[in-house]
Amino acid sequence: MQESQQGKRVSILELKRNFLGKFPSHQLSKILSAEPDSLTGEELLAKAQTWLAFFKGDDGTE
Image (cartoon, rainbow, N blue to C red; front, side, top):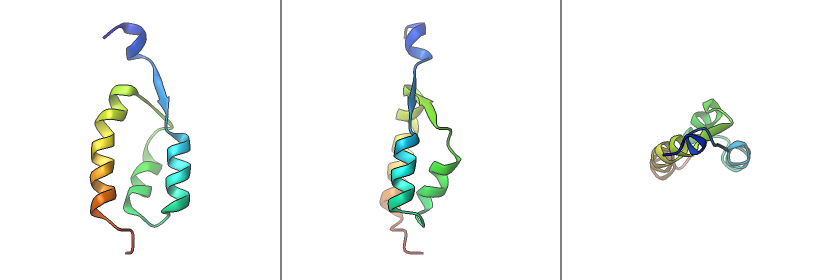
């Protein structure tokens, strides 16, 4: 990977705001809140699979 691509960051701030607004009591809301507001593309891809597993596994009704 080129050096310029390694340092490029992706903002997840809008994702966090939207998810917390729609699913405030969902377990994933707590996880997303703890994440930084931007991630590298590599970090985002690595975390997205885990986030999806939490979203599918918890309906937020607890």
